[in-house]
Structures are given as structure tokens and as C-alpha cells.
Length: 251
Image 1: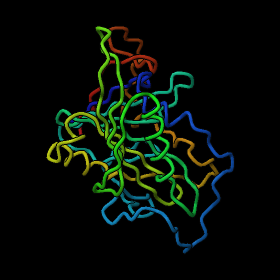
Image 2: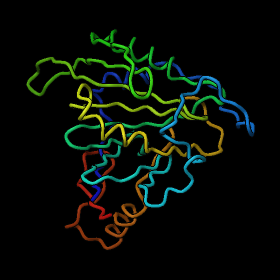
Image 3: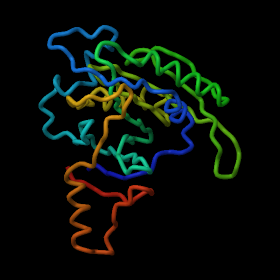
């Protein structure tokens, strides 16, 4: 069973804000030449994958720019940009931990994770947090402690683990939260989720760092549309600008 819940973009996510504050190059990514090498891109012997490497994704959860293999007990929370209503990220929650996934367009011939990693670290430290670069199963990654304010007004720190993977004309960022930040056992299942991700970049020209848009799975979108068509006020509707009701899809 997979559970889908829409949520708004986290306003107090300091690390996310620091990543988006940096300027983005204006040039659009060019089309790849057939057979051309991609120096500087991450080695991905066990994933995540480009759709050209995993064309058969029958049974996967199709979110448009990302396709995910379902797991028992896995919950998906879609992140919606409040100003546009565009779905641009997905959080996978599993066994008390979570990983937030975003996919971006990237240059054809070089990776951008080294540059983005430095920007995230600088942004976190500017805001009073800490950022440590460490080796991980996907290469170099960051473990950060971000200042946060609790409901009672006290200031604390939230630990997050930033992983980046450079693919052909795309970049995938995974942010681990909860026990998976420091506990290898807790992280193992979510790391397998990340390895199984299939990125669908598309052939259109996009500026580097432009977010690959996501969408509701078709079965969930159909259910929401049918709810509106039936006019059943007692049934929950999907409001992309607030934490919405849970919609269950039996797989």
C-alpha cells in the first residue's frame, strides 16, 4: 500500500533556502551527442538510473520526472510550489525516516554536485549551522545541522544528510532526515529507494538547475478528478496549498 499526501514547500527549511538563493546559469542545456562521454558525472553502477538505462518501469510509481519502485509501508508526500501549484519534489517516508528527492536539469558534459555541495555548506554555516563533508555510498556527501525554531519558541538544530548524484543532463538531490542521517541500518532501505530511482529528463532544452516538474500518479489524479466531478463534499478534495488528506492507492 502506498500513501500519497500533498504538502506545501517547507518554509523553515534553511538548507533548502540556501541552495535556492544562489544564482542560476541562464544558458540552456544542449542535447547530448550520441555516444559522447560525460566526464565528471557520478559513477552509477547500482543506480539511480536514467530512463534510457531502465526503459522498462512497469509497476513503478510514475511521477513524471521521477519514477519510483514501490515498497511495503512506503509513504509519499508530494511537495507543491505554492505560487505555481507545480509539484517539484517528493518525500519518501519509511520506517520513521525520510528522504526528500528533487531532480534538476544539468549541463551535458559535467556534473554540478561539487559546486552545489559547496553552496549548501556555505549557506548552512552562514545561518549558524554546521556542515561536514564525508564519504558515503553515493560519493561525497554533507551531514549538516540546521538551526530550527520549535513550536514553543526555543531554538534547536535539525540534522540532515545531503546526497547528490550527477547523471546525463540531470542532477538528483536526496536529503535524508530522521534516524537515517546517522544510523546506517535505518538508512539502508531509503538508500535502496534512491538507488532504484529512474530520472526522466526529457529532450526539451532547460536551464541548468531548473527543477524537473513532477506530477500526481495517474491513478491518484483520476481519483481526485472523479471526486470533483461527483460533487461529493463529504469526500476529501486535494488542496495543493495545505497539508491535505491522505489518499491511499492499493498496489
